[in-house]
Length: 188
Image 1 (spheres, rainbow, N blue to C red):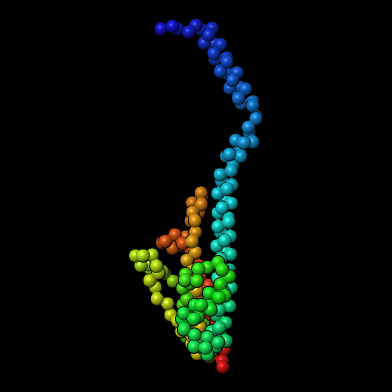
Image 2 (image 1 turned 90 degrees about the horizontal axis):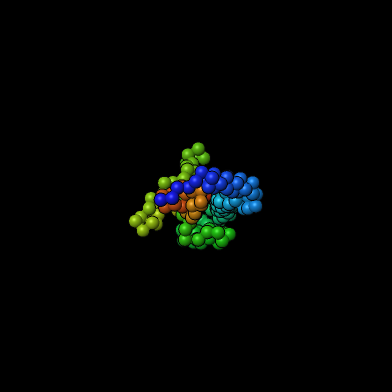
């Protein structure tokens, strides 16, 4: 086995130190490496902001759809036309701006004894083994002068981003959007 001489060892050490010094002084590719460090969090944050924005947009679109459709009950048009639950759901679908799958709407229309007794909270959804909602919803058009509560729910799909931003508030990794309209039916 050959032993290295102190001179050779010292030369190698100086050569390594010089290479390390050159590497540290070299600024070529610095922007690329800095971008690589910042790019992933930037893209993740951008996707998270986009997803939050889409959920807020969908929520506002659902609110508008519910307000337009609630006018059918408020003005007595639904009662005088004898609208069935399916016909009312179709009217809601017609007011849909195209963001929602019409079969995904869950409509709960019921009377309230007074404005103070109105329940506008989000319901707890229960699911069948196939993943569909097993809750039953009321459909009551009321009479002229009745206080009505119309709640429309929709399960909006959300996607986990690189930051694991989880906006799902349901067990099936969807976000429950809900729009509520409380009003008194107009007298005839």
